[in-house]
Length: 177
Image 1 (spheres, rainbow, N blue to C red):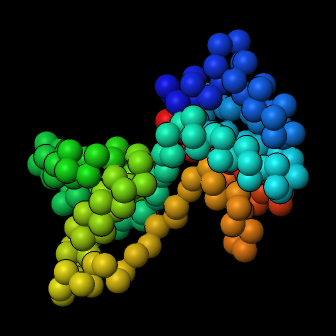
Image 2 (cartoon, rainbow, N blue to C red):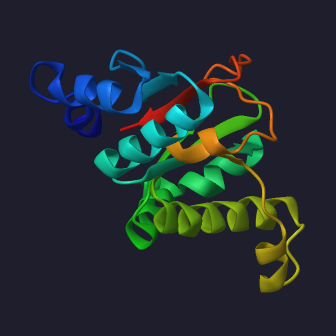
């Protein structure tokens, strides 16, 4: 939420200035969890706005990993010890939603912190599934969905919003803490 406040600025001044400078429309939804940023306009303008947003929010990203329900206990650990240790060692924030099957693990923070957190989470999941035979397996088996404000420049994949709905070609959403 702090990043969303930095992005909007006092009385909306920062986001309005960015809209003028980039010729885009920028909407920040602070009521969603996590907060989202929607940028619309011409592709090249949206790309410039995404770069500006990334500068303000500090380049934070989020990855979503699917986790089998039977691996959640191992991932969280007794009294949350394992998940807290991963957060401490990686520097990322990790949230486990076990209300669905498979469970959803959201890992957020700066890119390098998220990468370290994802590696640790995947290692635990693979150990539980019995599919990890060596440390090199972990480096070669990558998954999850990466989301960041600068994804607007990647036109080759189908864009979806946080709820999984298709987006218009020049409309982008970003996750903001």
